[in-house]
Image 1 (spheres, rainbow, N blue to C red):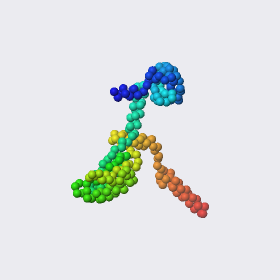
Image 2: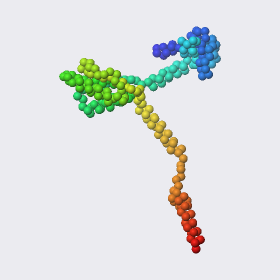
Image 3: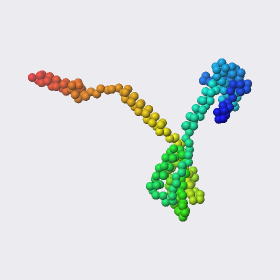
Image 4: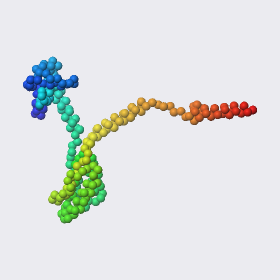
Length: 237
């Protein structure tokens, strides 16, 4: 049923009953009578597909209809993959949460906001602990302040029954987490590039300029100095 509904979204061939259409392709666009466009489609062995019925005249493409549907499905899949799904993550506190537990939950909230998710933090007052509601409000305000780099307050702390809520939204669009398979593939590709780079790196022969056997600059300089010294001694004699 879904496939049939998808296919019925577009008019093709003889279903297009307007007088003229605009044909778009790689070389540009051309307005022509619909009959002429249908003849072109038959000659090329493809379909005349109406992709923009509200344009004047309607915009059509000469393409195999099954291929066109496949391209549309692929494009939608790619767009969906690029979208970051925003979720609301909950962080729960008690009115007298200790520092270690606070830092642990703060770290998780920071990660949630960096991924583009919203955070709903709340303090749950059990029994007579409702007497410490001011303490719970201070806790939530501190929580918002510690997350100000990655999150912004959507609503200040408010008491609803036995819970006091604080809502935070991410300041920046999140980055979707990559699957382990994708991370492994990227690591393998990087390792392969590194190996290829080492194979193509030119080998440079190192020459020790200090070793006479290698004809180094210092060795040549020393030989020249000795020769000059001997020549000077001979002239003096």
